[in-house]
Image (cartoon, rainbow, N blue to C red; front, side):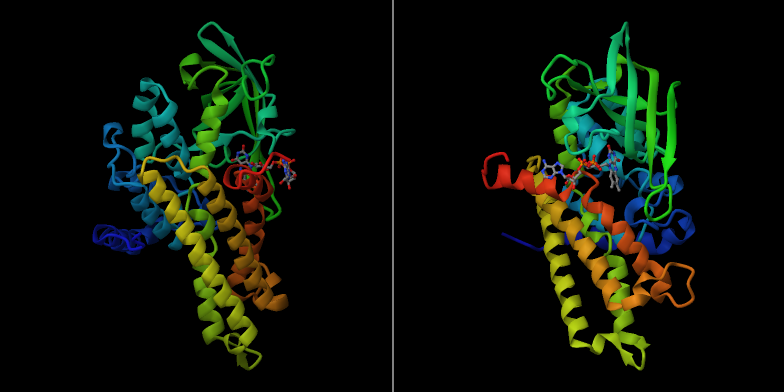
Length: 389
Ligand SMILES: Cc1cc2nc3c(=O)[nH]c(=O)nc-3n(C[C@H](O)[C@H](O)[C@H](O)COP(=O)(O)OP(=O)(O)OC[C@H]3O[C@@H](n4cnc5c(N)ncnc54)[C@H](O)[C@@H]3O)c2cc1C
């Protein structure tokens, strides 16, 4: 077992840091007000020019074959710097790898180069108004008509309103089959006639998600990923990629580093908060949890480099990382007492009110991509071999 990065990986980390120091300031717009969520297409294109999007992907598909650990290093540095990678992250993290695994040659030729250039953003079309954790109950229908499938239904809580070009859509193609067997996956151009996108305001008072409705939308049959009615398998693989990212645990950490500096240096009521033994103990605890979560995320990337699609480990990493981010945000808010609830714009808000924002944004993270309860079910079932409840 070797927990060190190779000299080449360390060198790459320094290269990414130098790039961010030099170039990030000119992409201020879209800087990640929501962790990795900031959208800036010009920045995505710039990363594409650098050859960093899809750098883990096999060379035969135009990638650099540099591995998932290297990709995790690049993502980690982007997140720590607050870089706006929200336009291409979903495409890079889960759609590209899924297309490589399950897509047709034509889909690979069309989508992979565009994703790698930072010119193709995806949203995820799984949840529906009546379907979330029990995803296989989805009702959106796709019915074949000549060379097209005609889609009718609705997808909710996705990010199609934030610059995405395509939605990765799971739809029911066989209503008579058992629920896991009659689903297929489609790559759907969000500009097609019959698609309506309505933003939804979230608890942070921003349009964080949207509702997408499909009314007689005709999608060419060549846009189906994998076999007809066997899409559940494609969805499961795609979710494993989704849960593999290092962003879950890194999300709050840039602010946490600033927070540590704040309690170390800034006097509050005549005393620095960092002198309080309870504050010191709580922040030390968070640092330990962050380090554990970080290594869990790197373990997942290492497994991907060994050619294993991490399933159990991705769920462990996703669950732990999102819960650490929540505890980290809550810890910072609690240490600040009532000041921790002040919003950006308040002259009395420490750290420009970002602690309050981080706390609000951390809450839905244990829901997105599968709830913590669902992750615990997966771990109990596949990790511990416990029977289904
Ligand atoms: C910030 C954010 C971003 C999102 N982005 C997307 C996106 O891009 N695309 C997309 O398709 N969806 C997205 N979602 C939706 C997300 O995937 C669902 O909200 C999630 O899967 C839960 O589904 P639900 O909201 O219908 O809750 P439900 O499934 O109704 O769950 C309600 C509660 O019951 C619990 N529960 C349900 N089933 C079980 C069980 N078997 N055992 C124990 N407890 C259970 C859940 O844990 C939860 O606490 C996003 C959600 C959030 C918050």
